[in-house]
Image 1 (cartoon, one colour):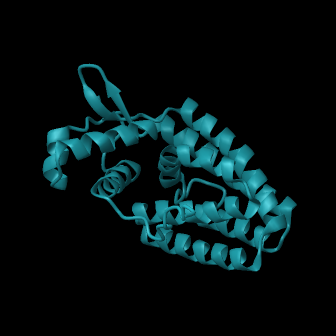
Image 2: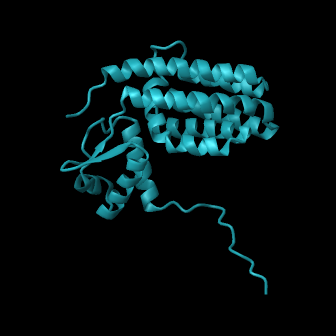
Image 3: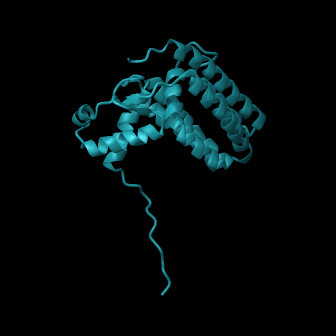
Length: 228
């Protein structure tokens, strides 16, 4: 008898750790926990109503994402995002996102166009409501459609590894008034260029967005205070 294999799981179950991970990640990204601030396991357990095992596992995941760092004799702290870190992240994004936007403009299907337009509306709504968690998810969805449309699956894996730190930078810069154009305006131009199937314009729109955001991040990180 031939082995039929395992039945595909259509819906991924949400575990308790997934919920705790999302809560803590959002709290770090939106600034509830400041750079350098200690993350005391006992306090987190009490606030979230979960076991220390779940909290420790979650902190290990956040460490791998670069959002938390463990220091000897101190314990876990929120990582401080330095300008050198940010500069490297923007340089990586520039290479990966410009290429993805250009190829997406060439390869995008009608269904992906509709998905991208919907993702842009969700992103604009989240930015207007100034809800960091929703903005994080909407922006991630917007870019995931672009990378999928480009067929750049490996590049998207790289971006996801950096996504926590990318999101911290996005929350800092996306709605800043001290920039050439507001973040959602840049996103609109990227979307329009891709839907118009113009790879040159798509690449240029992403480059303008990242150059603008990078300049704002440099200024904001220079002014940021770290919790002692």
